[in-house]
Image 1: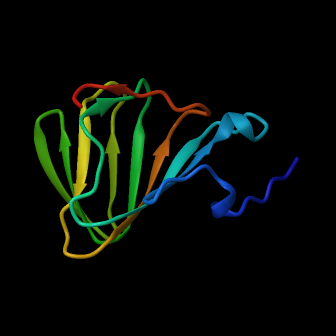
Image 2: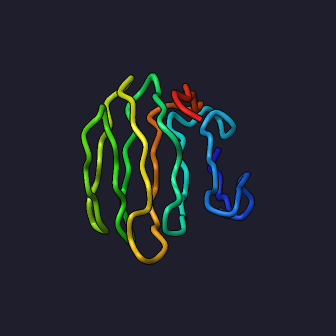
Length: 113
């Protein structure tokens, strides 16, 4: 079955819309549509699968396994499965990116509060 989903129909917060593939005929992918203010981002965590970040607008600073990575609009960051990571919008304006979880169901282990 084909699904057409309006992003505003997805569960969301002020900064993110959440799509989990297992809710849509077991689609094998999940993702967040992020629109974060300066300074916004999650704390250190891991996933048992790869996470792919597609930066659409702004600048995002990642911490991946202790290393700092600067990414900007037009770049893609791939974090391997099991690797601790976090990010923050390090630009002056909002950052927009798609955070793709290579699994139909999201699974996150939070490492810091």
